[in-house]
Amino acid sequence: MRTTSVRSCVGALSAAAAALLLSAGPAVADITSPSPSASESLAPVTTAGSSFLTATAVQPGQPVQLAGSTGDYLYWSFTSEAGRTDKIAITVTLPPKASRHGASSWAVDVFDGLRRRQACTAGAQTPTAAAGAASVTLGCTLRKVRAWAEPWSGDPLPGTYYVRLAVTELPEQDLGLPMQVAMRISAHDSDDIQPEGGKLTTPLTQPVAAGTVQTSAPPVAAEKEKGTGWSWSWDWLPDLSTRWAWTAVGGVIAAITGVGGYSLTRHPRRRRHRPEHDGYNHL
Image: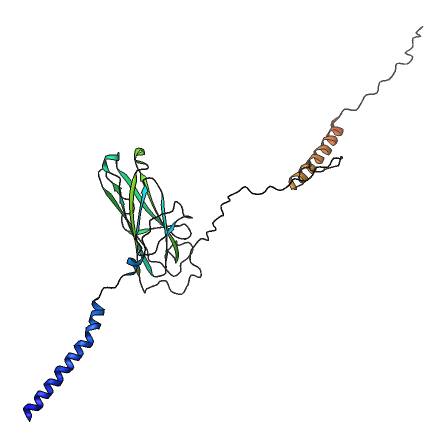
């Protein structure tokens, strides 16, 4: 009897262990299976703007790969929130060595929504590529975005940021050579948002009102019909303003002063007496 009960207990434990393994199998498979990241699902950006107004929007983690020409200014824009630290990494594949004529210096600059240049805390912001280098790497780690700040501080605030890539020094013969640009913006969030006690009501994003392109000439207003008869017109008179009033008053004062001065300074006329009898009789 004792042996039979022991066997029954062992069989029950084995069945329970098998059921537990079967139920845990899908869960383990779900945990270990790789899930696609947000950056892998974003399509790569293949364009760049030529100014702040035409900057290409990029999301953090979205790859940027494009072909350009040396000497061009390339602009991108991204949005950042409070408590986030953004890092920008750029790799420029230079033209072939045989077509270059010397070293080149590059620069990456970051501006906020008010076009204020933001300082980089880390990264090669202004590297120089040797004449025989195949590529050059640039980087910029921004300061942590704050929830609010004083207007004079210039601290990074939530809103839109602009990235500009440009070459600062380059032989004139190398202008226009083809190059390849790869960029990635990574964002690191933090729970520590300082300083406390304030909040930015509106993100620092300049309103961009794009104009409309006219495909045809604007209509010309019809001119007024000219009268055949003679009519008096005051169009030739200039518009009266304060300057004209003071000029007229000054002219009157000058005329009065001139007349008065002449009256005070002129010599009195001498009366000429006709000679009368002077004792001689003239025949």
